[in-house]
Image: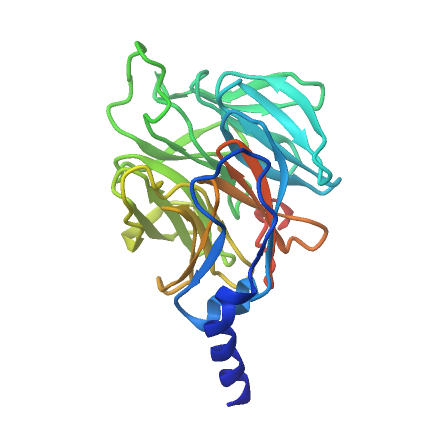
Length: 323
């Protein structure tokens, strides 16, 4: 009972206890704040929190990926480059690449990127080169791969909407799919149910697969078979919002199965049962996020021109560290 009372008091008081380190821009469209719906939101985020600006001055940031060596990979879609971003704000160019988007590590710690302009899934080498791993399905070029993760079987799973299809180029595949790329280089279509599939994630036990649809403004969940095939697709949740407030995009999961999904105004936090626990309102519209830090308890957030970090009370599920 005392714990419940304490949580409820913290829930009421949260608006008075949030601190904010402002982004280094002349104007931000909204203030950072927490909008809890359930007391569990505060158990995950904490009441006294500080949003920090790690680095700014980018064009449009995407694809954050924490390297255990102590830095973050970040895509800048505007200037077509991937950077290393260090916790102190230092930036180093890794590679110039056509519209780099979502990133992940695979089980061999190779950096994998969705190169939208190349219409391909590529490996980025430490020397700043790239190698195409897949760019076609049944002989037809992908649309514009958007986000990628490593699955429980070690395969790569990725979405292929038309969101970044280069103007004037032909759409060869007549749908927007979700695919599996195995370690032998074989590409398999998993679903074509979504209109614009975007962010994706597995549950920590590998039995559920989440993917959001930016056009429909919802999140789908599927059951996962041992061979990676999907079934029983259904709506997990919806993230409605006003014009220019953002749409469902990047997805990350903590080690207990709670979901952190970028959406209208910020990051929407959900439990595994599809209950919206609250929203982290961001000063810039976030596109994606990653768990980082030595304990993977910090969210690194790519939001328009900046990279932010937010320490939490939970710990991330990091699939490329699971063997």
